[in-house]
Amino acid sequence: MAYIQFLGAAGTVTGSKHLVNTGRNAGGNRGFQILIDCGMFQGPKEWRERNWQNPPVPAGDIDAVVLTHAHLDHCGWIPRLVKEGFRGPIYATPATIDLCGILLPDAGHLQEEDAAFYNKQHKSKHSPALPLYTLEEAQACLQYFRPVPAETSKRLSPELTFRFVRAAHILGSAMAELTLETGGQNRRLLFTGDIGRVRNQNLAPGKVVRSGPIEGETANLLVMESTYGDRQHPTNDPRPQLAAVIKETVARGGSVVVPAFAVERTQKFLFMLKDLMESGQIGRVPVYCDSPMAIQAVEIFMRHSEEYTEEARRLVRQYGSPLAWPGFQFALTLEQSKRINDSKYPSIIVSSSGMVTGGRILHHLAQRLPEPKNTVIFIGFQAQGTRGFTIKSGAPEVKIFGEIIPVRAQVVSFEQFSDHADTPELLEWLRTFKSTPSRTYLVHGDPAAASQLRDVMRQELGWNVEVARWMEKVDL
Image 1: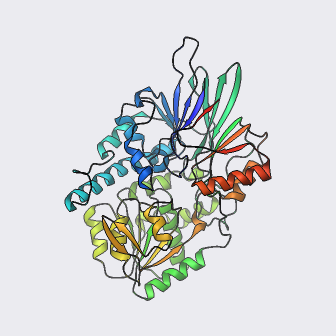
Image 2: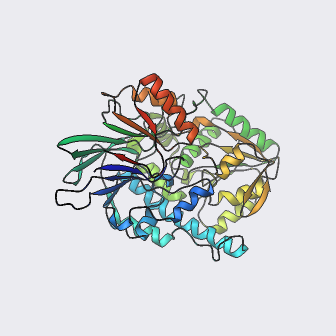
Image 3: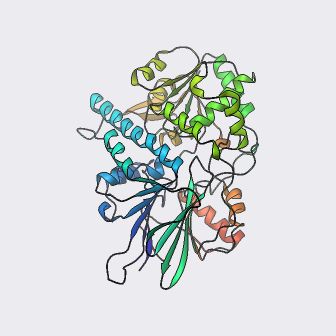
């Protein structure tokens, strides 16, 4: 029996892993098994602990991985999968492979840094604290990546082929469209990964990748994200308010701290800051980009202009590479990062991780959250259970490195920077389908968001929609 099993991003936003088994062949041998995405769980402890558990299928029995894009909640468990014995190919678009080449080693490096810090401070319940994987283990997994351009069919086994179709979420992002020959019939399975936003630059300012996913899809079974299934993005331009917040913070002698995803969101935000400075909407204050992967990420960002919107191309033509901008500094080493915290002057600090689950942003927030003169700006989705969600929700304190840190800084959130389609945008895309899928399963959403989107799709589209459950098997 061919089936899908939801090993992650079911009941939560993160940890995307969907196992496809083609069923036993004519000789009675087990079916070909692939993972669509292999992401890291983030957020509540009950989910994070699953990063340390082996999947129900031994890693060595998985034949291939098809990766939709290079965010850690979709790719961040790949080094661990290889560490546990996986030796098959990992298929991704060329831009996704470029990004994973810096993102995964950086994730391993940051985990080693965090483990070392916890051990030095004796603040871990485990002795010693260990990284999920190391920099070296992350680098070792890169040998298994294989590039597949968008719209190119790739045969995985006699009964299974796939191709990538553009998702317009981040550079290289794509949906995985599988064709399975079973019982004498062809069935098309579409896994959306994360779906990009609308086609209107005014509603999604600063957007890098060409807006809107590919229209006119056909699928017998659809597995779709539901991250923003219970809300709509604001439709106003955030730039005037962003400029006002920065100016007010600097005027009171404070600094602006921006947790941002290291891949694309950081680069997009840097270009917006540059544009605001050059147009005189904000003053020229020092901007620090604190991420070990900063230089490489910018270089990749500049290299893949074929996916840009016209606005992104204009900014690149006008200003060139951020690495050469006066007043913009990139911290690659721990020593450079520590010097940022030694500065007492107003500045803008952009650092990862975007959900404040780890990385150098923790040190900047631990130092600056207690001061009312400072401001924290969120420009990305914050999953329930993450520190980012806690701070954004107005909590009076947050736990960082085992210590309780008071939240006295101003906290501001801009939802317009999201790279996820919201409910109206998802419905707009779904209405372009050439035929209705027989079944749709919603993943990659908090329970409330997924349930609300399910109800809306049933009511407005009349589709057969269910919310996927963790470890659930679906017969194909």
